Image: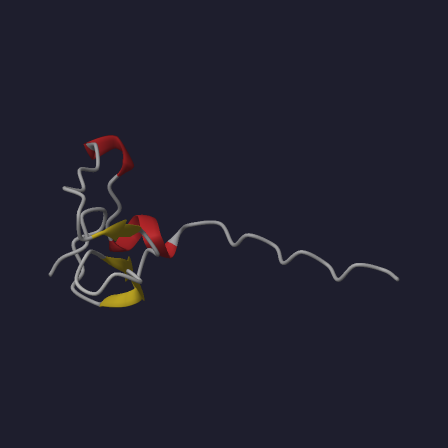
Length: 68
């Protein structure tokens, strides 16, 4: 299986339907795109990522802990 956004094959199953065999949820381990097995995922070319774009993505800062 290939990621529809970046083309890598490092895909994890992150959830499964409570009804056995109804669907599975997948996530790319490289770009973190996710989709269900029941979808036909399509990513427009403007949103596709390659290794260079992934390497230059900004890091999202962590949310600080709530103060009590």
